[in-house]
Image (cartoon, rainbow, N blue to C red; front, top):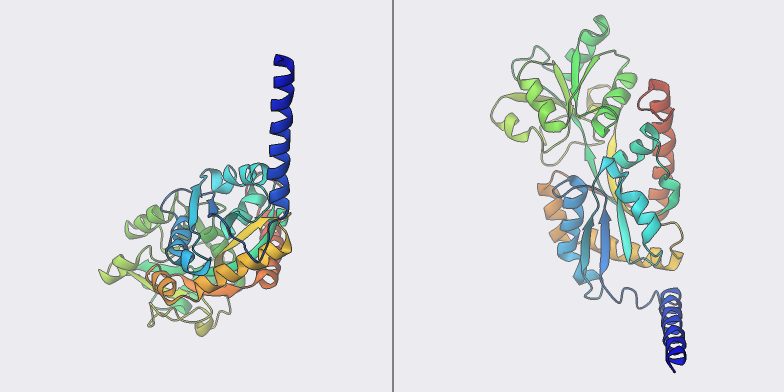
Length: 328
């Protein structure tokens, strides 16, 4: 009798498991989502990716048929902890999405990790952040051209700070210097805040940083911005010219978007795209991004996918050429 009972329990469990798996395979894109979406953030609380997804979450229900977007933080090693966990544990059914940004792409080239952008399907590019170039208020460099001219005449004499080797600001610095045809001496720090403090303490002459870091110091008259590396002037900083306006045709967007496991059905990817696009078009979300100095830069799956592949190739080549990290 006990043996028969055990067999019946096992059969019931197997049948139940089969039903669950079958249910996952038969997700109806027209009814999706039928439960909450979890946004997987491989960064810590309060970081840029966390803030973006929490902002989206404030309007998500209104565009997803009432389903909320939850946040799952998996911080550590610039994504190298949370990203493999995502790939190994989540079902590719669209109910777990993940944020992607340039720093995660950089990580795949500076460290030996077992994933790349090619392990994901792009859903949407949401926003872009743009670095800017700061100097102390008493700097002799009054314009970007002053800085560039001096650096050309004195290779390596200009000390330039950034938030850390292999980070977005570092890559932005390297690419800008290549485009401008200058050589500087890098001064890396452990974060954008320490880099700014180093600038004000006189530890370096020029700083590559990202808003909103430094905005309050600009208002207090402690630092000045020479240029932003955006395609157009940032609406929050209308008096700050772009590098392009000042003769250096260089733009460096650090985008943030949504991706999913590469095995996620295309129909589900498209449904997620529709939801997040509607969120991005919501004026309430645009107002939040404005306060965060983030620029909505919508890109659909194809466009965002091309960008990720191109960025992966370009950053990989640069990191290999400069000998950054330990992968190459």
